[in-house]
Length: 225
Ligand code: SF4
Ligand code: SF4
Image 1 (cartoon, rainbow, N blue to C red):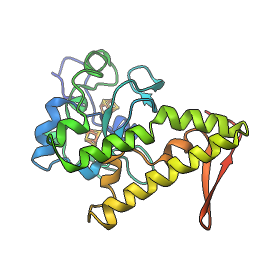
Image 2: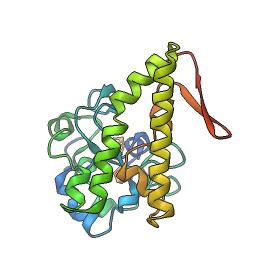
Image 3: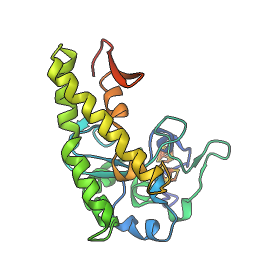
């Protein structure tokens, strides 16, 4: 949301853009994370290779670099700081830079800065932090491009790819459980540390996961995206 001088078209603070999705975070937003305005548990990491909605282009793109985004609420991308009742932003006075720059009737300023100076997990976790090794291992074992490739083959009946996909899903789940059960972390931190769960990535391909006792079954719905 942006305020302009009275002679120009102005943002009416209607909240439509907040309902469509919260902002990606940039280096200018780092103080907001450091002072607790935006807790890490309210950030979702979108990893390279994921398919995401690109606001300036108005379509789905494959990410080529990591992006940190404010989490959504109620299983939507509606910004967690958006208050439906009051139609306002809980952190408006300290809103992230994308929200400050965005004006829906002229998205050129947003497009100009959209993919520049984006924050990453490694900007926020100090060098040598014990979790960094886990992030690297998770990225190596569950890279979104590998998940998508295995899912496509498994959909076509490749049993080996199905086994590999199951292993990735198990590992992704166990790692998140480990950091909460043994590390005592807020479960919401998993989306910051390891990105969206693989179940969410597979859902974007119309693939659902069912637990059958100890085993995992995939349901490949038609209409793959
Ligand atoms: S930028 Fe546009 S959509 Fe967003 S709050 Fe302002 S008027 Fe509404
Ligand atoms: S941080 Fe505030 S202004 Fe930005 S999308 Fe969320 S609710 Fe809207």
